[in-house]
Length: 360
Image 1 (cartoon, rainbow, N blue to C red):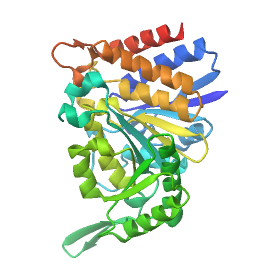
Image 2 (cartoon, rainbow, N blue to C red; image 1 turned 90 degrees about the vertical axis):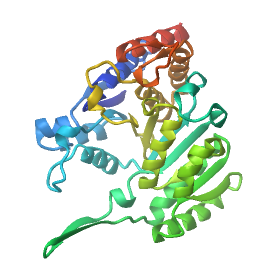
Image 3 (cartoon, rainbow, N blue to C red; image 1 turned 180 degrees about the vertical axis):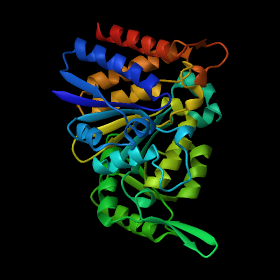
Image 4 (cartoon, rainbow, N blue to C red; image 1 turned 30 degrees about the vertical axis):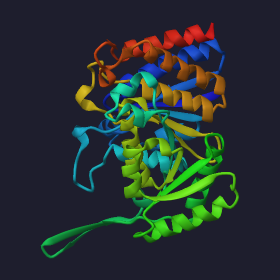
């Protein structure tokens, strides 16, 4: 049995997850997939109910599953600069670290009907298909941090550190993934300034010796940020650290026209993964039917591809999303004149309808 832990989280997380579960339920029944799924709290709602963003019980449920489907966490209700106050985002850090999810894959693919939704020119977006491979359990997000009060002043520090092992395993995955794409890896670092980036580059070059069929080039993170906007088509697979990957993948998301379109997969060495849209909880549109569920639906497709090895079903979901967009249906974030405005539930229903056609 394939067990899935569903964590809707906060804000629009509950709304977009509902659309994924709608698709999941149909696929489970129609293809006899023998999938069992359960729900639990995580993030801000878990703080309210349990006093902590991630309980040990919830973590154990995730560990006993084959995959986790996550909505979003966070919101102004739980914002605080007090270092002792629990924060919803700590749930993400905890899940990634405790589940060993060292690799985050974030694909950025341009749907032709949505070219006009991007702020970039059409000719810049031609055939853009980028995969960001981000190291997820090391670097500054997991390094030592501290506040120091001396006299009347306060200082703070965060430590950005990487081991050779952490760099090696994410580099291996990037090169292996590139083999099924266009065989090109761009490793992004800040080796002209940072010592950990110098180690990053050394290890990536060492690992590359085993993958001579893959083209490798290096780019400083500031230049990479500029090049993603100037000429995103030059990239295929981007390999980078935790903090750089966080920033660059969000920037890359806007190339597509909306952060609500892009999925992600967080993986470990076996087939276990956590799947989530890269957008946040968007509490400003919660309950208004404006949330775009596409990123979550595509995250579900990634789950079938990477954790369950069901490429056929993953492709069906992706094709169904593409067909709905080809037919001119748009949620508020990607709506333009001449297209049809639909709400969150309607978008999910439309994708389900196309999926049923493909499955007949």
